[in-house]
Image (cartoon, rainbow, N blue to C red; front, side, top):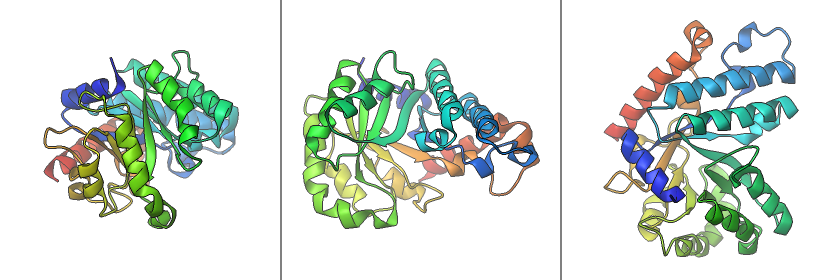
Length: 282
């Protein structure tokens, strides 16, 4: 079964396009205040606890989770071990895993990145991976080969949510959007190559119109300023076509919270239910 079909089924089953980001910010992790020695190993253990809490909280509520590789990588080998375990646990719980690594390189290096995340025996098993296209279309071919062979997906950076993105993305956005959509010409009804389109930009609705066969991964909802209405505008009328991500807003309290430290899964579950409802209201 293709990635796009599995994603459509997961969104339909859970009744929401919400994707929950797993971003283990060291200073905000549950239990961080009680940690005397904030070394990498200790933070990796808290990151693992946090990641597994998100998985437990979300398993029946959302179609997908999005681990942010950088936070785990910053913690060294113990952090990468935690990332691998979180990815495996999420997939075992029935969640689709979108690896947010924004990989991009040439030839054999791109192939190695793809094998690390999208192959059947990948050490960091993901159902889809975010990739950077700015080295040229040939650098995406190794990712495409592995993704198509293994029924996995890609999300290509197109119009990201950060304020400065237009300077270098705007000149290529038309060509890149057309290239992405062309990869999905045989999709039924969507293809395996998605696009990252921030909820914070007015071009989103036009890109949605021009890319009807493309799944969109939509950051920027919530903490980055994108509204529920902005995000919902990128979802097709049938409820499909876009994964709307919330990371900080769905997984961290605004201020230190003892209940969060004691039982992060229960706290996150409540917050995810609230975020689902907010998104549904639009």
